[in-house]
Amino acid sequence: MKKATAQFRFVLMTIITLLITSFCRAQTNSIASSFVFSKGADVGWLPQMEATGYKFYDSDGTQKDCLQLLKDRGMNSIRLRVWVNPNDDKASGHCSKEETVAMALRAQKMGMRVMINFHYSDSWADPAKQFKPKAWENHSFPELLNDVYTHTFDVISALKKAGITPEWVQVGNEIPGGMMWPEGSTKNWVQLGQLLNKGYDAVKAVDKNIKVIVHVDEGNNNAKFRTFFDNATAQKVKYDIIGLSYYPFWIKKDYSETITDLEYNLNDMVKRYNKDVMIVEVGGEDDKVQNTYELLKATINAVKKVPNNRGLGVMYWEPQGAKSWSGYSLSAWQADGKPSPALDAFKN
Image 1: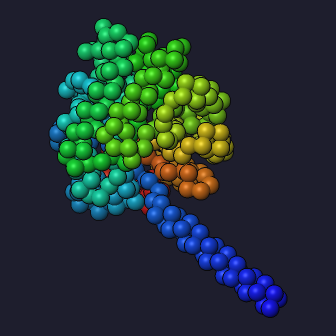
Image 2: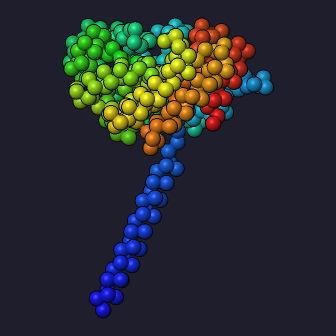
């Protein structure tokens, strides 16, 4: 009798173990199948391009909506920058709250995911310059904290009111030296940490499911990233995703010389800080089509290889911003108004 009971228990435990294993596999497969790699573009210039009469064409010469052309090449996401009180300059203005909401709505209607990128400036903010908005110039630091919170909350709330929930929000644009100088410089990490957390809190106050990104340039430079995010950790900065730029052109090296460094850094960021990673800006030379195609393929593969789907996606910066219109030579658009074949890298 005891032997039969023991056998019954063994069989019962075996069945339970198999059921649990099967359930776990099903859950894992479900999570894996729900993950969608983001392939996209920053298109902040698009409304201005259209307003100045620029026309976009498919490879067969048919005039088409620029977003449709990007979607046809495998892109599923759009990134939009926001400036506080921008001017009307063609290349260095626009990107107001109202224009951003309009563009986000247009992208969403096409089934595209949306990323919002706060510069906390009236124009370009990047590693070389992080100017406070003119309206905030004489504000005390406590007032600046309130400015960041109010501006972020206002823009994200306007998007929500229009029926748009951004999937990602960047608090600051390329900020290896901090933002809103001098108060938010990395020379004063205590204050920078507070500013970043105000942006984070404002986003989550509107929708806790939106993922917050902190963004640093030179994605192949592991030492730069460790320095920045070690300091962010020390200041208890809150964020969900580490955003990286990757431009071999600006460091005067071919992608083939730095792609392994990018791969290492992506994986190191996940392991060291337990954060997802995403290339939020990438670009190659418009007149080197094959090289840019290969750069994009290699970059996408590097992000996809990050274990456990923790590499979330790749965004090209202003691919439609044709040099003939913008003067920018790292776009991916031809002089005839057609997309560069380099963008076919996003189809796979």
